[in-house]
Length: 121
Image (cartoon, rainbow, N blue to C red; front, side):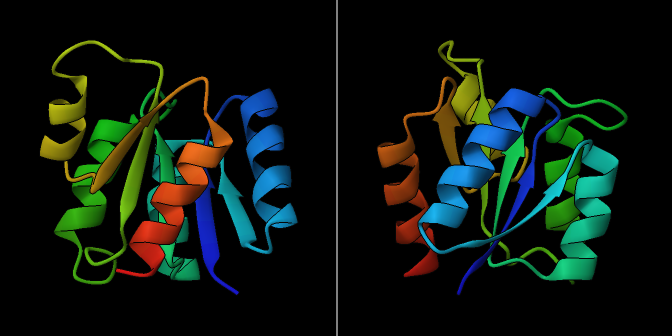
């Protein structure tokens, strides 16, 4: 069973996503801010990280940079989750170190396809 680290500060989004992912058979661990997300990535060694970009303490942009700068976590695929859907936001997320990008509100079918694609890469 693949382990997903969900880094999301919005309780409704976190609840909806974690329930859907668990229903699909994933082991889901959660962090509520970017700093804790970075720490949990090192502690939990997830197979993939779903990273909200608008987070307290440390935003997702900085968290992604920290994750990709660390030898311990740099190989973990990161999918950015953001309500920022303007032109250039995808490039900004990829430039920060994210491996993929998905917009909110989350289309769960599309997100699951991206997760499977990265887990099977």
